[in-house]
Image 1: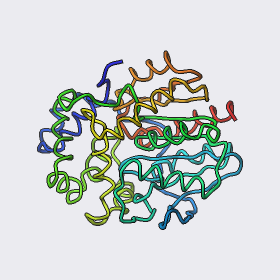
Image 2: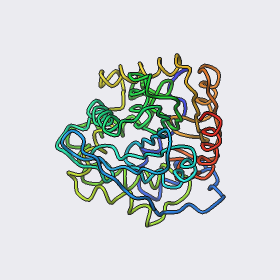
Image 3: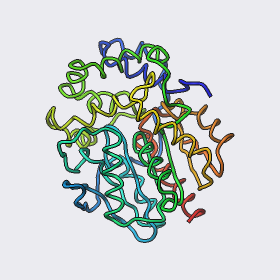
Length: 332
């Protein structure tokens, strides 16, 4: 299946960060309708825990009992992303939602925050908690990290639930030109000096991409503040700058490209139970990707949640939670 699927749409929307606010609405397609249903709570009402990992500490939620259900977030979020989904999963196992190193309430060691470094910290976290028989629930870069771990540790993972995943066919991206206007945004983010101003100084992923461009509904002030809290200074925002520089575009970075491609092969070959959530139009995992996976992967279910872009947990957490709970019940 050919790139860019719905990822181009996301890149184009990201590119509009540089447009005057008055031009953004007219430049976009007509937005999808806002979601309806139960209220989406801004509260994060879980007891937090810390574990020492590689000389630092990682924060996590630990609710319920039984085989672990490990939730992994991406950029620029944290375990807070899963706050309205977690209660649906706790009757079906031990729910663990971790903040990746340098993100959320986890420690911020002086490391490079590249994909391989995150993978080392994540595996050390899983080892520290002695987790086996894991069901992964993953999003964005958390999907690539989770698939990488599952591929290398097949005896420790029983199933995977993913949404807006960084995996073929949406990734890798063959060129900046293939992204249309969005290619310029990624060129700028990856240009020394310019990227630092955009992400470290202006905190664009937290202040603009997530709340204004990545969701259908409007996030509340409390939700915006919860996502903003881990990144009060330019130095604290380093992970949110490194992540877009890890996106495999035009063959670079080569090591991440190789991992993403290996993850894609693994996803096609493995027979473990899989569940994909998708929205329309989506970003990296819209209807076309869901159709492709349904036709090409083994033992997979695909569930449509409604209108949405990238952070679909903020638009449809209750539907995701209910469908996840049903899938867990049937694949326990």
